[in-house]
Length: 59
Image (cartoon, rainbow, N blue to C red; front, side):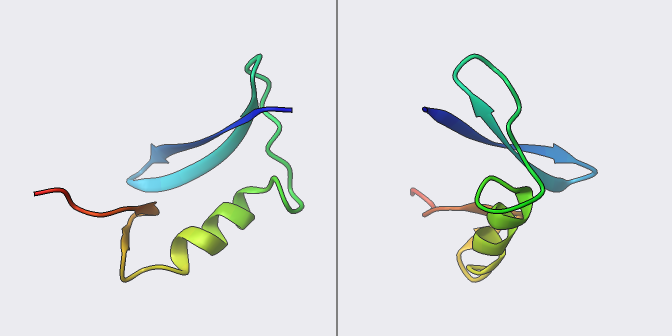
């Protein structure tokens, strides 16, 4: 199964979701496809991430 991990924003806060190729929302309340799993990783790198988005700044 191929999936797409998305980040939407609501009230300037990230909202994580997981979708199948055909657009079905398969975000669940338990790991590994839960929003809390995404939050754990994204907030674990606060020195490198802003509002849940991680990466390098290209100059």
